[in-house]
Length: 113
Length: 114
Image (cartoon, rainbow over all chains, first blue to last red; front, side, top):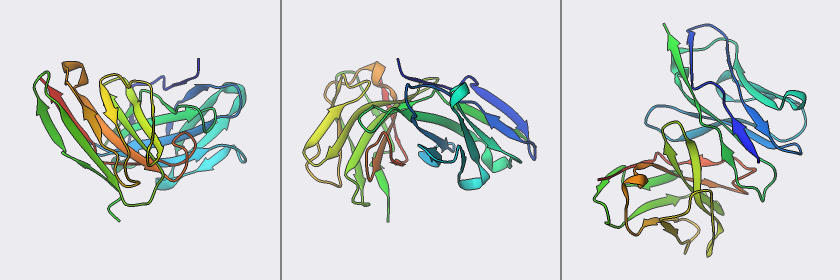
C-alpha cells in the first residue's frame, strides 16, 4: 500500500543548529512529494514540492529537501534554525493526479534558545 | 485576497446534533478538499471536489456529506454528530489536482462533540 512515513514525532534542536526532518514514501513510480508547515493554531502552508527534475528542491523560509529514490526518502533540511521555525511539519505524497494525497503523521519541531 | 476562509473557528455539539462547517475561497480554484486532523494521525482526507457539482470521497468519508454548488463554496455537513468526530477540520483549495498541486489551507475549525 502507498504510504508516507515520518519516523520522528518530536525533534528538538537548538537555535542556530542545523535541522533534518525525515520522510519516507512507498510509491512505485516517481511520486509527487510535498512538505507543509503548520504554525500553532494555524492552517498548513506549503514549504516546497517535488515531482521531477533536480532532486534538490529549494523552498520558502530557507528550507530545502532532497529526493533520494534509492532510499525512498524526501528529507527536509535547514542549515540554521530560528525560534520562529518551531511548528509541526508534514510530509505528503501521491502517485499521480488521480491518487488520493496521503499525509504523514507529522513531526513537531521544538527550538531551544 | 482573503484566501480560504472557514467558519466557525470553534464549535461544541451534542451527540446527534447536526451542523455545517463553512468553507469559501476567492482564488477561483477548481479543486477543494476537507481534511480532519487528529493528534498523532496527521491529516486525513474526508471529501474533495474537482469543480462545481462534482464531489468524491476521500479516506474517511463516513458521517460527512458535501456538495459544491459554486466554485467558491464547499460546505461540510455533519448530519448526526458523534464523539468520534471531535477533531480539527481544515478546508483547502488548489488550482489543479489536490494530489499534485499546491493546496492552500484555511485556518481550521475546532469541533468538539460531547
